[in-house]
Length: 217
Image (cartoon, rainbow, N blue to C red; front, side):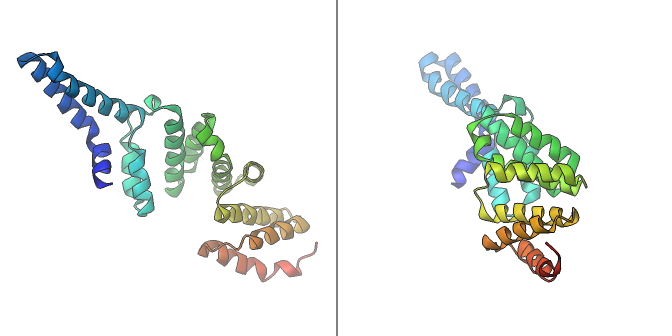
């Protein structure tokens, strides 16, 4: 795995070196001894531009190293060359990192670019992406748009139960702000039914539980 990560990180330079080695072999010998160097070097260069280093982002994210993940994303100089599924993932990850840095306008723009690339990957992640867009809108204070995106997320389906609980909890908060208490209680019930374990979500549930039973509806 470490070797694979090393190849991803340095394949551009390795590809250049192999192609230059192929040129030297071609000059001093013939084409056929140079062919393997050309072939492998070209594969490495194409994979650098068409697939990119997003596998490295996953490693940094799993380690909680947001700065490292940001460096990898910033290293992609020509995202337009990425194949469509990878490009979709690139803009989605870019949006998530911008959201973590509280750059909400840039995060929204990146997420929209990722969602506009209609691939199987984005279809599988549609609910999660709409949830992210909803959270961005709520952070910006646009509760109407936030509610719209979160409803879209729930309609599309969210595979991760923790994220689904976040969606229901946000809808509960939105409904309470709109004084639609019956709907708020229903969303709160659905949140608890998922039995989330995220400490932040659990804390919010405990806070809401103190008074939701006393509100009308």
